[in-house]
Amino acid sequence: MDTQMKIPQHVAFIMDGNGRWAKKRFLPRTLGHKAGTENLRKIITYAKDIGISYVTFYAFSTENWKRPAEEISALMDILLTYLRAETKNFVKEGARLNILGDLSDFAEEFQNEINNSVQLTKNCDRIIVNIALNYSGRSDIIHGINEMLKNGTVESITENDFSKYLYTKDMPEPDLLIRTSGELRISNFFLWQLAYSELYFTDVLWPDFNEKEFEKALKNFTQRDRRFGGLKDD
Ligand code: IPE
Ligand code: IPE
Ligand code: MG
Image (cartoon, rainbow, N blue to C red; front, side):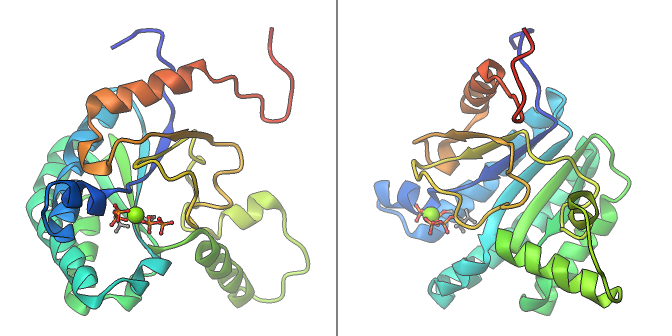
């Protein structure tokens, strides 16, 4: 690894292109989701090994419910199988699983399995792995506002106070967002949290996004001049 590389604290991924990856191989879309899910391990390990503290994976958006029921249930089965097999490895790697989004719309078995993995990894402290499920940026903000209202009448609130009501409370905002598969949009992912994130888009499809591609993104990030509205240092 390049010693000059700037290591972001938090990297978020819009894991897109599973369907097209499968199509290119004349396979059913679900095999693309399987390959995409199995790709998580190497990305998490690489992130942890180079010292990234938080990674977030957008796995299922609130809009993805528009897909055919068979695709959704196959995707949930794949995620369930992955979690069952992978939780031990999360613990071994020191990866703490955290879910962003509203799980209550999923089957009970699915919720239980996820909560179980969250519990089993709760003391892991090498890296936090957020998986965004039934998540969207807008629903995050609306969920936060409703939580805030539950706490009684609020007359005014600061940005800092409000960020504590989001699913990402207590976490740094992403320094870098990576979207695979060539789409140049946010698709209702982190809206609040991306205010000053560096954006990186690649044509590589998610199941093909490997350590080398990740390193390319990090090298690109290293060249960025983050000003946060201020002026250059030099
Ligand atoms: C991303 O892959 C995974 C999810 C959104 C669940 P897609 O399923 O969107 O793959 P494409 O965009 O059709 O190739
Ligand atoms: C974004 O991908 C959502 C996830 C990766 C979970 P989509 O494939 O749903 O996004 P659009 O429809 O191309 O914007
Ligand atoms: Mg897509």
